[in-house]
Length: 208
Image (cartoon, rainbow, N blue to C red):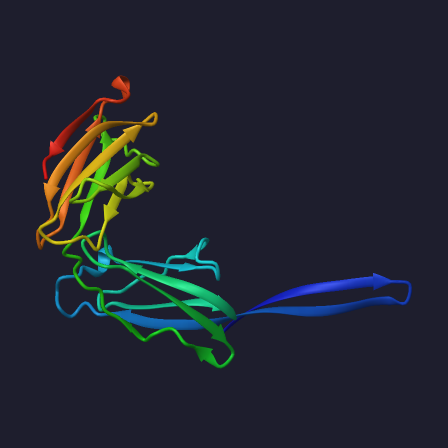
């Protein structure tokens, strides 16, 4: 438990009164199972979010054995544990109080076998964020969409194995590049570069 002391003095006609306000933080700890050797602890990303699961509060470090710990005030939170698009991430709610935390003590990340993922970059190797990417299913119908993140990455998971899917990359409201492939047991990578000077013309660097 960590306490932060803050001096507060109130002054008035009868004199002054001093208070000490304490902001108390409680230690939360756990571990990610890395015993199989398939997960590199250096690539694990842990994110503590607020009670609405929308605001990132902190990113705890993970040591070589998968152990982590952090300190937060009493309240409700979410913890997201991720290891890139080829593993299923976990997001769990938990609460912290003076009596402890109900966060699970251990996390096991499983390989995501039915995944399409990729990265969009400019030809100058600049990442392209907030680019719309659409996924169309085996029947040709629209399934879902995603925006590339700050690193230019996108992913679609929980797909049907041996299904044929098409990824559409959009710009200015229209499809400027599409790519079709069949999802097998191993994740499918879709990497693209875009010549920024040409605007909407994409060049495939790795085929499905």
